[in-house]
Image 1 (cartoon, helix red, strand yellow):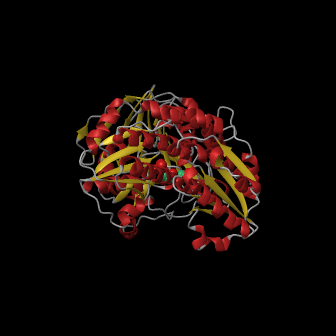
Image 2 (image 1 turned 180 degrees about the horizontal axis):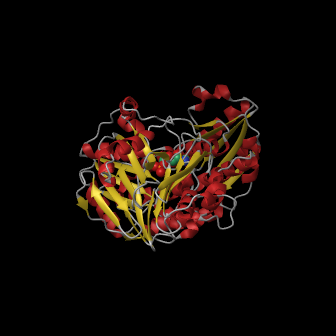
Image 3 (image 1 turned 90 degrees about the vertical axis):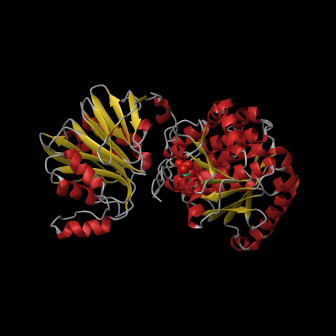
Length: 585
Ligand code: M6R
């Protein structure tokens, strides 16, 4: 959520621009760059995507630059609200929300500072000017001490060839390159440029120059920073011949699942077993897609472990004051590990004495720092805003956790990657996508482990194609939503559990009797003549053990959503109004 890039040294503007392009998945409603040029700060910023800046880049020159790609929180996506916010001696880019901005703004206006934007962020640049007496670091210290809320800041000062960064609950990383230092919201933007990196901790300020980086606490006590090598795995962030990242990442599902299962080693298994002692209930949490994989995890764990397990939406877990204590295992699932609602839910659990497990795709994330045990997802960098391969990786990781805690390996887990590869070749996915685009609304139904998949199919379609719809438990449709069914709607039934197939087939018949069109995604052994006969599309999946089916049944839904977005002329990688890492609550 908002991408920040900074560089001191060499061709700073080009490096910042390249970094912003890689960070665009974090927000893409407006963008801007400031550069220090012979003691002056020059800024270009515009509504729209980072590429809007390209034509004007040649007008910017200098050895220290900061840049930003925005996901608006305060103020519409306009040229004026775009970051950086430059005034007087400083220019600032910000990721996060400053909660006490309005009282500080009033104070600054009363002191004669004038504001150009509607953002919460602009107060930072005026505070810096207010506290500046020739000492950059002191001005930064006095400024961050005034701020309440969440922030990652990157600050340029006209008087020195340095950049200051500060972190409070929003990610920021500093990177060491050849003859330069970087600041970035995320590691992939540094890959190929920085050789090593340090992830700032909450409450730290760093000052970077061409040849040095110093790290301090918010009260300016000097702190150690251990730089770790940056993996130069650049293919992750390249399209490699695919038209969109979403298509590429769906095709990477077999590798994501395989790598996740191989990364689940004995150490992880033993740590989980140790943590599980004294636990008598499990709560899984996450947001969006990660919540759907958490639901699958809860269904499986309750059955396999015989312990109450349920999934909670991370934001609601705290809003409703979920009761938990030392007997609770909280499993927080997040691709990025930076989703504010999920990280805060994990902190909430810790404060109440619960044991916390993080299931994340990003090793250096904030969530991992809160957790007692980290279970790695190895899906590789996911660039598309819509989560696909990370979802399958998360479920594989959760199945491995269920296996470890129960002491029994989940049946068939070793064959799941090849089943995914087989499903990627399924027929009729294009036909399903066309049906999506011809429908006024699409309803996804499933029972048991197929229900979270129905929710995920619906989320995927909505977020990339903007076609409205819902995911429903198949048994629940008749209690209200059936009223929406007519000949313009499509209902997609997901059926992979033989024990529940007849019941879901009956729900399909209830839809057909009311004139609704139906499509079916089902395991071979769940397909009856009755089910197939009147289906507009019937996608057949290979049979696989029940707990594994959510990994494969989602694939045609993800791919059909992708194709529907393309048919509708939408960019599936960057859906409107969204961003990948949601670092605000
Ligand atoms: O990084 P996270 O997994 O914590 O992100 C959670 C959600 O924001 C995310 O899954 C979102 O729902 C996806 N864009 C859906 O495709």
